[in-house]
Amino acid sequence: MTGPRHADRPSHTEGSPLNPDTLEVAPGTVRETVQGWIPNLATEEELRIALEKAFDYRGDVTLTLKNGSKVEGYIFDRIPGPSLTTSFVRVLPANSSERLKIPYAAIAGLAFTGRDTAAGKSWEAWVQKYWEKKTTGKGELSLQPESLE
Image (tube, rainbow, N blue to C red; front, top):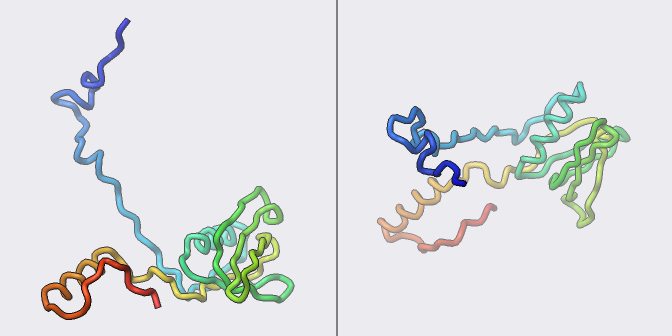
């Protein structure tokens, strides 16, 4: 018993409506700049969306808790659950090595206060700087990344 050959698939035969050049291209993404943003957290959905963006953010955020205290740090994990009391963010505080687990229900406010460590950094910008240094002979040529500070 034999099955169909890979080469006989419709995408591999002449006259195929599928264009492999368009299939191999993935659309790019636009990175939203949220540095300095203080989202409105009036609804559960707004809180969940803001915390998802905070998880994707590459800088520190400041969480204002309902008890009045503030936690500044990097959100390195989140555990979404069916309710705000069963959903958590995990934070590395800026002033401590301890890891905090904070329920969504305890969060009253969120601010993207830290600098986005990768903002403005791109491969194209690095290559351009490299070639400028190489063509002018100025500066040390290195394949090491530049400091973020």
